[in-house]
Image (cartoon, rainbow over all chains, first blue to last red; front, side):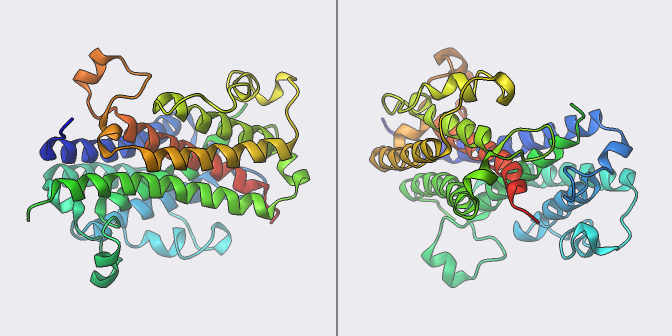
Length: 166
Length: 166
């Protein structure tokens, strides 16, 4: 069986993006189900709050603009609260409505940028790996970052699911 | 920039397998850190135990032999306890040492099978989609299943991480 290059490339990009979208869809469905009060609650005793995890995921997805070289980030100010410091930092968090709006804005904009990317762009190095390391490990490309971040989102999704009352 | 087909295909497969292996490595590192008593504990009040989640992940990975058409499953008997029924079913669970052994055996054997697969095998349909649906959605191939299961493992990994005492 011969694989057509164009088909293979398009398929793999579709696989990566569709798995990323599936995680977003699931988190959006969860957010629809939860009140702001529930989101502000803790996922387990002495563990991260829903607010923190939603802010964290928003910051991590927003950082994709940098990693994938898609232009300026939309919400770099989230890093201090949700990436560089823990939930318990005492730093004031934005209202949940604002974090939710940022979450949706980041994903909508990323999707537009993804749609405008050329297939070969996905096979170039991401911004956090040196040209030297990329020459040795060419699988550490932009597609890899998207898949890695999708799994990361799944990780916290498993925790956020605990906000739903049993 | 022209992408070489062979390289592209090899890269996709490497991305998918390396992300799967990364999740296995992380779970193995977590298991090394936990006592059997901790694994038997609950990930959060009234939520799944570590025992159940480890059995569940083992059963889901074992099912990959079927989905990826890699031969007979190693532990189909786990499905009844860890897939078809909840933690609270009252069904007797195997000792943790046995579940851990199964977990490692499944992953080692899967890796051997992956290494023996031809690149084009990954782009064929998985066993749970009809030929008709696959014709319409050709991205639902074996690589897609592996990525989907990797994200699923990440989901429960986020919960298993709560077994570590703070």
